[in-house]
Every structure is written in C-alpha cells, then in structure tokens.
Length: 545
Image (cartoon, rainbow, N blue to C red; front, side):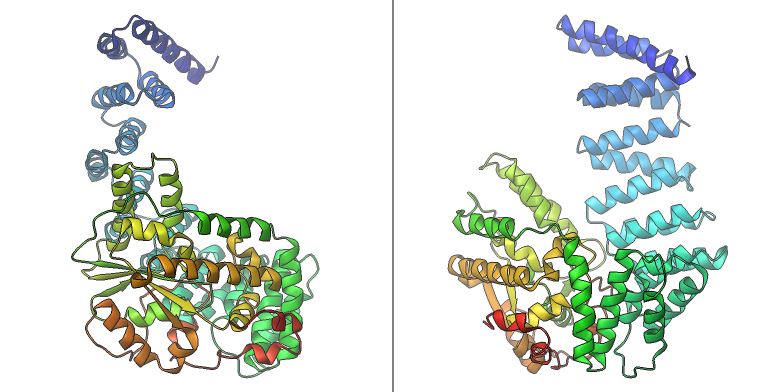
C-alpha cells in the first residue's frame, strides 16, 4: 500500500469515528472529538479529512479541521490554500483574502496562491487589484511558459489585455522566443490597436512554428488593415498555405474567410463571395446550432411575464445596455458613447446569462437572491479602476434578458442598435466566429431566423418598457454620428459633448470590430449587401426591415 493510500485509510478511520458520534446526536461533541483525534495526526491526514468533509457538505467542520491543521503546519501550502478556498466557498471572501495575502507576504512567488486570490478579486469586480497582483507574481522571477500563458489567458478573460501583454512581452524579452507567446502577444495587440507590432509577432510565429496556421494567425493578419493592393504579401501567403497538404479543416476554413475579407477590401466581390461561400459551407457542416431551439426560446420569452419583483433603482449611477443583433453597430455605438465624460465601456461582460440561470433556481420571490445577483453584476460594471456615472455593457444578445435587466435595475437604459437586415446578414456571414454560440452565422436562413427573433423580442420589450429603451439605426449613426450621440446623451442625462477623436490605444476591443472601431466613422458599410446580391441571391430573401 502506498503512503498516500495509508494516509487516506487513516483519514477514513477518523471520519468513521466522527460519523458515529454524529449519529448519536452530539454534533458539537463529535466535532471536538474529531479535532482532538487529529491534533496528533499528520498534515496529510488532516488534509484528507478536510477535503472529504467538504465533499460531504459539512463545511463548518471542514473549516475547523483546516484551521486547526493550518495552525499546526503553518508552512503547509495545501492547508493554507484549502482553508482560503473554503472561506470563499462559504461566502466569507474577506477572510479568504486576508489569509491569502498573509501567505503571499511570506511566499510571493507562490503561483497557486496568486491565481486563487486573482480569481477571488475578479468575482468582486476588483480587476485592477487582480491585474496588479498578477504582475507582482512575475516580478519575483521567471516562470515557465505554461504559467505565463495561464496568466495571460486569465487577464484576457478579465478584460485586462494591457497587463496580459505586459507579462507576455516581458517573458519574451527575458527568455527563449516561444512561438506561443508571440501568438498571444499578437492576439492581445489586436485588441489594443497595436497593429504594426501584431504583424511582427505573427511573422515570427509563421517563420518558426509549422503549426501556426492552425492558430488563427491568417484570420488575425487579415483584420489588421484594409487591403488596397492585390500584391500585398498576405495574398500570396494565404494562397500558399491553402495549398499545403495535411491542412486541417478548421485552418482551411479560417484561410478562406481571410481570403474573402482580403478580396472584399479590393472590391473584388465575386471572388470574395466565392471564398466566403466555401468557408461558410465548411463551417456550417460542423455547426450544431438549431433554428428550432432558437425559435422555441424566443416564443418562451414572448410568453413569459415580467419577473415577480423589482429592486430599488440606484440614484448615483446608470447601467447602459447596448443590444441588438451582432454586427448591427453595437461596438461602434459603445465606443462613441464611451468618449463622453463620466462614461465607461466594459465591453461584452456576458454575466446576464449566468445570473438568469442562478435566479431560475431560486424561489420566485427570494429578494435576497435578486440582491446578490445585482451586486455580483454591479461589481463587474463598477470595478476598481475609475469613477463614472454611466457604465456600458455592449453584449448584443443581452436583448434576450431585458426583463431581467429591468427587474434588477429599473433605472437602466437600453439602446437597441438596428441595421438593415441584409447588411447585418452579410456582415455576419463574412465573419469567422470562435464562439459556437454564433454558429447560426454560417447559413443565411439561420441568420434570418435570428434577426427575425431579435426584432420580435425587441418589439415586445418596447411595449413593456417603452420609457427605458431607445432604438438607433446604424445608418443614422454612421451618417451623422455627432447628432446621434448628442441625442442619446441628452436622453441618458449626460453632459453634451462631441464625438471627435479616436479610441485610446490602451483600450481593449475584443470583438471582430477591433480594427474598424478604431477608424474614423465611415458609411461604406451601409447598403453593402447590394454589391453581393448578384453572387448571393439568398440575401434578397431576407426582408430589409
């Protein structure tokens, strides 16, 4: 029998004795007896007992076992982190944070403790503190590439691309040139608008890693600029890679999307349509999206009544939800609004879906559950990096949860972006999405169903919450951006300001519009579908309105 098996066996003996005492009906005495028995036990015995108690749901006894063992073994990382994790699970984050910070004072290079505390801070919306803590970890010496990548992915997920890129670039400067780090640096650079530097990173990846074409590098390159010359080296690169033997279906599909975008830039609509048609056919064959399930979900939302209660509105801040069918101008509108004083754009938070699921499991009139849900989301909006009065979440499909929004924040403002349906359909069909939730975008009939469902639902919300919703057409926004934003600012109660200027270079945009949103507002995408109607007649089957 291995030492670990022996330790687990002894832990089972302690737990069996504890269970017998519990069965006798003396819970405090049973707990005291277990703690006494463990007082002379090994670190491993205590750890196994505490973990088993957590699995059994006896959290208070597990906490007592962890705490006593941590006192006896103050240098045992697993016990200290286990206790901190249990405090967090028991909704005692202050105790968890205090324990982790004390541990990190003596063990500043402890990766596991740092990552645990970073995740704890993120749940509280303290993204700035989380990013500083992660940076501090890498100030205490080099880490292996896998740890760097884990940190970069975590910070990117927390919408902190600047700090993620800083860690990535520092690792590249300090050690061997790992192609994976160059790929991550390129991805982050796109979000931050550092397009020339991105090309350098991607060039390194392509020159040093044979599998780089499987990493979405071509589609990333195609989005760095608007091509103006068919002799640009990217064209030759894309075509050469497309001919390579052994290329995966995913990589081939990505290359076809990249080539379609490149030819669209040149106004070669026939060739662009041909590439996109093949790309979408391949992507659609791998899609699991169900039009029937989508339509059922829309019908269910239309039939549902309002949430059974509504919380009191806040008096000192306003949440703004920019919604609409994806590719309808939500990114552009949010970026323009965020140039107003006192406004912060948090991008696409994606929390409402999980909050809706949580509340669906709670009793219908559980006021505390609604308060907790609102507090969790509010923390993600406010964060700890700036003072503001208006906070934007531009997740387009938050339009599915307008009833939840109005229950949690009756003072919320919802801006509905609406764009010509054929332009929207073409824009979706010409994009390569990494999120399976957008698998509808590879088929015009699926796209039409999504647009129709969203419009039916928004009409429903407008009837129910007319005073809280404002619709703005994409064509009006790009045609007269100053006027459109001024009207919205007045409706939102913001001070008057103009649109001028560009997005700050350190502001991350993690959507397909990362390049376009940083350019001056232009109108060339309005009515663009007409260029493709001769090659994609399915566009004509989609109602314009």
